[in-house]
Length: 375
Image (cartoon, rainbow, N blue to C red; front, side, top):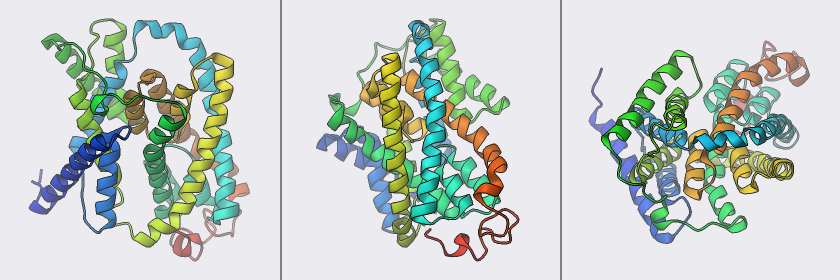
């Protein structure tokens, strides 16, 4: 394996230094979720200023695995008593994805004037990498799809904790982190480490999405449901995970021209607002049917990434198992269904001969939206 050059190491150091400084400052200011939001803000500002911070992928994946272990530790034996309510909320999640995606497609087509392929794959709330790959292959605008999804996650993660604090009520813990558990034994650490390593390997073997998160989460859930341990990763590790994941979100915008960011921001802001409103409506409805608190439902239905929304749930003291499971199911639904549904609705969404129609003579590099659109 080729050793990283000095420039790459410098980019890594810059991203993590900015993330740590931003987290520390946001902690002093007293914001919710300070370590992640501060890391996002400082790295995003650096990227927009022309700097090139970058988070090393092995470190990011390692922190995602640690987060997976943390999420799995929320699966305790008493969770079985609530599975009936989860069935109702999962059914609501399925309908919510359909309604939200349909509403956002209309917004992109009628208001933003995106082409049909770009509208469809930009609207699906989840599976960022998969939506970019499939949407581009179908002739959509790769930059528009990637920017809309990236900005959607950025807006959701950055605004939801403040909205939550304003409308739901939330007492921020000291240092922005959950309280520490009792001292971890060697057995506890061994079980948690085995959950991460073996879980990721098994999840990769079975081609589960986001296997570095889902595998450790499932492995940790098994050892906690079996009551082999009740341990959680310590708060300092949660803080490091927040910094790394926040820095990776902010540094995602390195190399994005300010004009592209500005032109696409309206589309992302409008679509994210629509999804959040639909999520709030469905959260109220599911709460009425099940009694599950709105404060947990809105986190479970909001259109952020699994890792990001799970960290928010951890920091806000919500039902982490409930929130993370719903986000994993949402992403699996979108990844599995979006390409299939598009193939069934292809002619209705993009009639042959129109810009962006697969096989219609105008793909992402043609004369339609792909070459002269908003992104």
